[in-house]
Image (cartoon, rainbow, N blue to C red):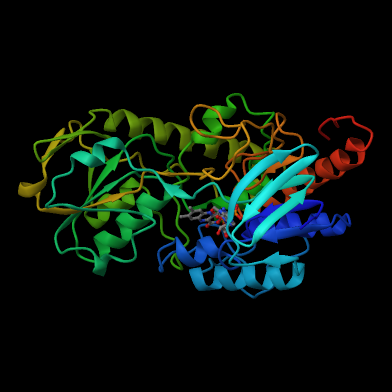
Length: 420
Ligand SMILES: Cc1cc2nc3c(=O)[nH]c(=O)nc-3n(C[C@H](O)[C@H](O)[C@H](O)COP(=O)(O)OP(=O)(O)OC[C@H]3O[C@@H](n4cnc5c(N)ncnc54)[C@H](O)[C@@H]3O)c2cc1C
């Protein structure tokens, strides 16, 4: 089978790219191993609500049209939203069609699936940046009496054993699950390393409103000082609940959760934690205050200050001066560990030598320069701070589809294009 471009994945990234290629009359096919929005259907816990407000889900040709722009979508609403987008895009879509290999050929690529091979000039990898839940090696040392699960396996607090739960990781997912599990009556201990503290509302506006208005979400990958670091930062401690409550560490300790430092080791049924918790919290407070200062400056410069509430600063994170450095799982009654330690993409089927030693694809803002015609979409800070958000993938898809179109044009005369 032949086509000009193959898009792998029918999440928001694959659908947005299909819209953009169709707008340029580029013949293509979208191959999806499950159904549209497969990741949201199969790899997220049922109570998840988006941490981005409804208005913040603009995709090429599509956006929020309901009556609650400041509300937050539930998981079924998110799936329905992407289904509606797929109806609008109406992509040449093959569902239940897993890609098992991608190889270079003389004049392009061969994409292998369980249904046969596609030959094409260009391939867009829109397979998601969060495919595999990362498990630290020390998970192998957990005593058998303690159940372990990743955030992909987690469903709800009721399916956990009765008793204490150690949640490892305090980015958005870890903090959201700590909140939900503590509220279910299971005492939570939260192991906290470097984290990004956030507050839902500032000066009467949603934090994402400020991130959008100030242009911070649009900050480009070639403008930030340290891109590697920007790409590996934990997500904001944010949740999208109807009461717009915070899920920062102060909110979690008010509920009753106990804070410990980063999980550093497990030996003889005991966990060991780093002593850096107070420093980590101080750093997170400092960074949040820096962000709020930047927002205040922008508001003053842009004549917005009078139209919003006055500036304020949140109370510093409350943390014990010497938090516990060890914990005996049995004695502390810990029956479950939830590993909220991040995700990584899966490229086990990609047979093009473009991976670095950490297994990530080397690319320049989504253009895989070592393999002309190969593109990436949907990863954290791919081209902008907002790249991995529903609201962010559209601009990246527009840029990359323009590059892909130029590549196809210029490829005919044998020249590689420059990046627009
Ligand atoms: C827990 C969590 C919460 C999030 N919350 C928000 C939020 O509130 N707001 C927001 O804007 N963003 C959020 N994000 C970020 C982002 O919006 C999602 O990760 C989103 O799913 C990314 O869309 P995508 O299209 O890039 O990837 P995915 O949605 O993962 O889509 C990739 C698609 O590729 C398919 N695929 C993968 N491998 C193959 C293969 N070999 N062959 C064929 N098909 C394949 C998958 O089945 C999947 O359908 C969240 C992310 C996570 C992990």
